[in-house]
Image (tube, one colour):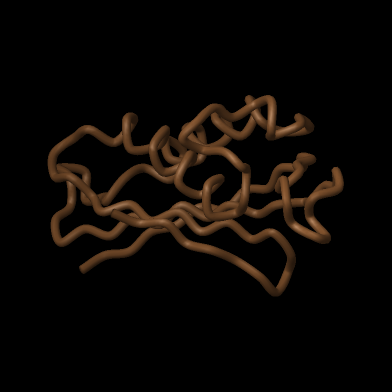
Length: 121
């Protein structure tokens, strides 16, 4: 099994309605890591080209960087908790990875240096 990963950052604000602390608008400097796992390599000997994976993530994060996530994301990805953000990123990147051999994708989102959530299917 091979595992590859890329990591990038973005900044955004959000509100988690009803939460005693996070119910007030605030922001984070998020880190996002895409991890691909595969038991097969493509004809070039890669799980995926790092540049391709970085490009997918950069394009997606460019759409939500420095935004108010409550407005930038749509149901079912609201409220924009770290859990829902990781699910959103997974859903968007998965669309780009329709290939053979099909790698298994997991998305890890750090809300702080010491707290993260991971979504995988």
